[in-house]
Length: 121
Image (cartoon, rainbow, N blue to C red):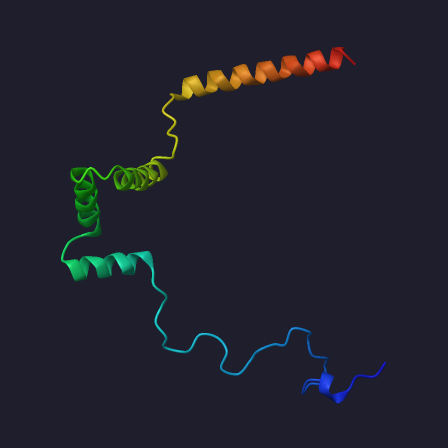
């Protein structure tokens, strides 16, 4: 089967089915970055003269003072979600002797299970 000239590139190879590079496509040179959380918070700090954390705290307290239970609950969810996300880690504080003892107990239990499995066959 012969290819038509319209299906050939300048190098004589078939074009891909998805096109390719387009003139003026993509991000222009010198364009600014997209909005980031850090730049957004910095802009809020600059415009208000106060940190976003201070503004959030003030808004939360105003919701509580106004007895707006729905808004207060939303602030609680927002704050607790942030706190729980940063506290979601486990720290191992066991001494090495305890870790070694647990490892030995696990190894013994595994050997016993393997023994039981071998005798039941």
